[in-house]
Image 1 (tube, rainbow, N blue to C red):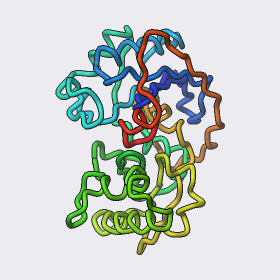
Image 2: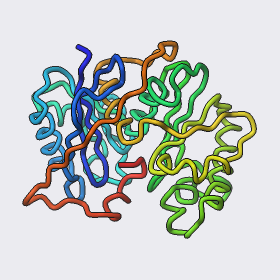
Image 3: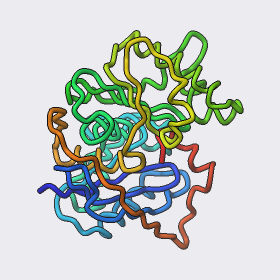
Image 4: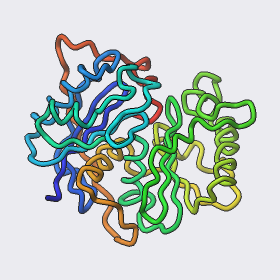
Length: 286
């Protein structure tokens, strides 16, 4: 079955859509429910179950998570409730939904989607996808194979914690213009280039919507740097790919996904994370 439900857990919203995993295109409108305040496991599982029921698709479901995911267990919780640490989240969501659910780190999901259907389509070698938001998420892919949970936003650049210094949130907090932020981001990219020698950097997250502001100011030695193209769809698409077991084949030349509409259900009685405070809960974009 090629149409799989993908769900992306973000700081302010949890979004889902059916995805045609052969083409990377959404097969229906996105549906969005506000993320419960605090993002505790029991509250989040109820939202995920509601999304699964809303779409009514049979088969497996892919879900992103803003933290380390290893064999279905969530092992970090920097931006969500601490009860996620050590939790068998695959089992939690599978029991709540009645479907076989597969979790994947949110940046890894975006990386899979961008490498297969987005800015990295057809690129051989090493592709590194970086999502700049409240923090910095990373996905490392070599010839279509994902090396999961790299968490490269937590590298140190001498006395600077990378995501605390070069994220989009750091740009806002330090009141940097785009050229000033690009200088910091270039320092970070140059360090990654030294360590991994990627053929291509793909820059995603919130900053990808404003590529014209920074693209000409980023400087690296050998690698190409391009903005991500799938934007808010990347996590949903990558989650569905994970659930489908659809490992990316970078030799395939498929069309990029068409944009889809998003519907938001406003919930009475549920207290959503609000505005900028909610967006700060995940550094991988929402």
